[in-house]
Length: 112
Length: 115
Image (cartoon, rainbow over all chains, first blue to last red; front, side, top):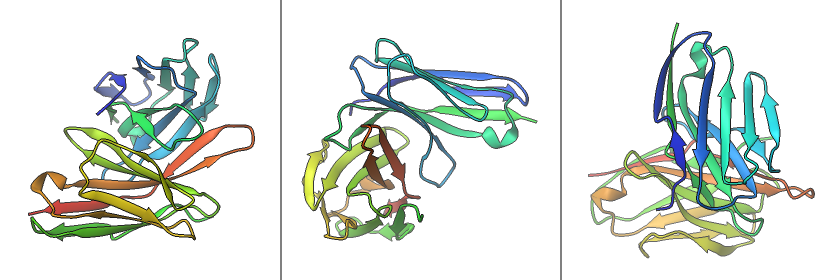
């Protein structure tokens, strides 16, 4: 099935470090969503982006909607052990569909 | 406000059997989408229901079906189960705000194991 290109695939960092991950697509999206998934649970919505160029923060998380509408990135500042999990980007095309296209996910591990 | 709920959380079935999964969306959300998550294929869209009608469908065989009730609750059914159907099945409910902004919230999922 269709997927976005998300990178990196995995990251192993020291507590306190900053993290950056990104997603690219060959298609334009109207909305970019970022999720975090813990083992055995469903994805939890972290940040939603609606306009090209938009920069949005949620605590230590910052995400941007690329100006071409084909990419987005997520930054996590000053990582802590509870940031461990899998982060997914998702693109949404139009208001008359509930279909999201997902990236492959970035697995984040944080060393205390 | 309660989140998206899914039942059951875990299920073990045998090849050839059928299974029905249930989802209750967030109150006020009329759109319910279903996804299959596997280690190899990631999160793949199955179908979406809006106001009791299937609005979109992913690229899955006809063994996968669903429906939505008047209270927006949704069920998905998989018939003639295959080993490859083992996966985490996620339900999500969506909201389009008056400003046009879109949000989709996921339930905890149903872990289906086919033996």
